Length: 310
Ligand SMILES: Cc1cc2nc3c(=O)[nH]c(=O)nc-3n(C[C@H](O)[C@H](O)[C@H](O)COP(=O)(O)OP(=O)(O)OC[C@H]3O[C@@H](n4cnc5c(N)ncnc54)[C@H](O)[C@@H]3O)c2cc1C
Image (cartoon, rainbow, N blue to C red):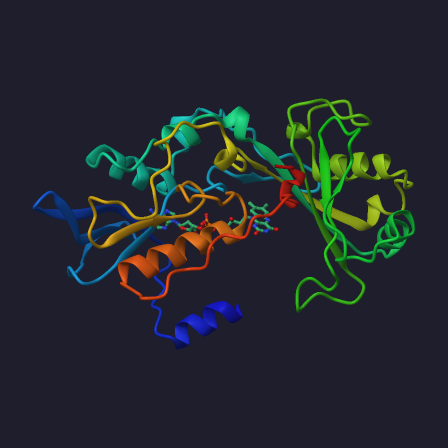
């Protein structure tokens, strides 16, 4: 990816297949300074030492943790949805930090409410121009110009995103792709009389075509739909109380900041990429002691991603 190539040229050392299991600190005058990072790589535990003038920025939690994918012919495997069984490294690190220090908020508020935060997404690969031809005729929008299309009568609360084509640089001319999701996958569909959660990709595509009023064939036969259940996709929007999310800059830490969708940033709305970027700007600016502060957040009247209006 161009971003990875750029960062590597700037000296970034990516460590793949490596889990951060703990962050170790030493105390001085009521403040904590990170001195080491414990990692698990190739099943062996290692410790990376950190100098007091190094800075450590940690992403807390993840909206994709616990996700599972199906195929065109089969639904995603139905997991038992016991929250504690699904706490991968994305959450265990935050839980660890929260146990040791008082100002890291409450990860349990976000990672255990799976039925409230669950959403099912799907991607469709089409080898037939018929779907896009009909969609442009229906919406008067070329691919990529509109926001999400929400099918308001859909029991599953389906929305689809039609990006500009080609979306991928290696995408063949005769292939088109789109992405969508259902906010209520536990409900029975309007055409397909079962919950989205137990549907194959083909079932989901049939439901989508039915809502749009398009004939099922030949589009269904020329498409591949991959469903994916994301039990924590909307966890960053769950009700919370003050203190559940830690602030980016933690007073008791001298060289550590936290970022991601589960930190507190005044006047910003979590969910999209810019929230993570904003957190990183604040973290770097503070920990590096930069004279220039990040610009104030822009106030937006609407929030198009996920079609939620605030
Ligand atoms: C289906 C979907 C569609 C989206 N569409 C949009 C969109 O159109 N526009 C938009 O702005 N945003 C969109 N988003 C949201 C966007 O993807 C996220 O806001 C963004 O990826 C968050 O970035 P992040 O770096 O904070 O966290 P993540 O992307 O979750 O990255 C965190 C990384 O840290 C790793 N990690 C976590 N803990 C550990 C550990 N202990 N040790 C080692 N590694 C660890 C994880 O494996 C992961 O790779 C979408 C998200 C989804 C799921």
